[in-house]
Length: 206
Image (cartoon, rainbow, N blue to C red; front, side, top):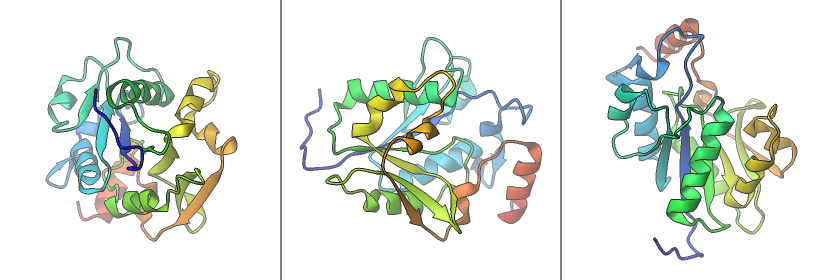
């Protein structure tokens, strides 16, 4: 197993890609986006950022998506994760087993349907992390929270304690939170409906 210098913080980006895109009525992660796809654009952004590892969680029947995941680590649970929280749990368990993270490490979370993910925002939240005063780092624009959100690894075990009706965002009510003002509107750019897709494509010049 990989040995890790506890003085060096590692970062893990979690991509929960097991959703069924019911409101989009097709797999939104495979939709065209500029010269790639929605998932391709997201993964390229994560790779451009300073995160150390990218963990994608998907279902067993997403063979086409699997081919697009390149150098990311893919986690495919035996039972398809019903909610985003379940995908996050699967990723955290894999990280714990494969990388033996230290308490000073961090994990970052953004929806898989954010093709405009800004690597500079990811780097900003990474730079804002203080291992001596761990807190969830949330990027904001004009007071509105967005993604990616940074979580200290020391908070990872709390995801296991969430009730069936709680999502990962419930941790923001239980843990120290530091908001980080940024100028990028991309922190709100997830795609839930065909209208969202067309609007964001128009805004970016397709």
